[in-house]
Length: 79
Image (cartoon, rainbow, N blue to C red; front, side, top):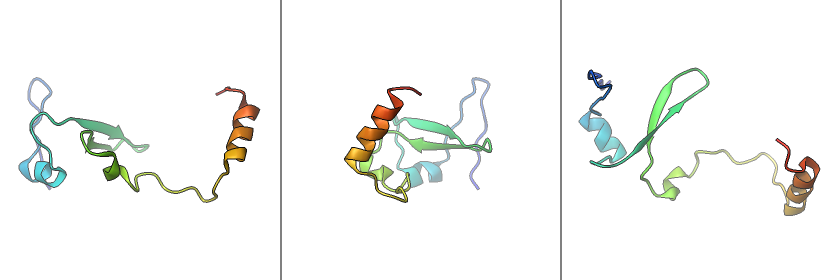
C-alpha cells in the first residue's frame, strides 16, 4: 500500500502510482471526504461530471413531478 510522509508544513506528496491511477497532474484539485466512521478519502475535483455516474444510488421508488411539488408545498421551505 502506498504511503506518504507529512512535512512540517502539513503537506504530502501523493505517490506516483496513486497519481497515475487517478490521472492526477500538477494543478489538479482534490476534495477530502470523511465518512461516518472517520475514514478519509480524497477524490479528484477536476473531472468531467460523467465520472460521477454511480456515486449516488438510484431511489427505490420513482417520484413523479406532482409528488415532488406536493412535498415542496407541504414543507413550505422549512428545513
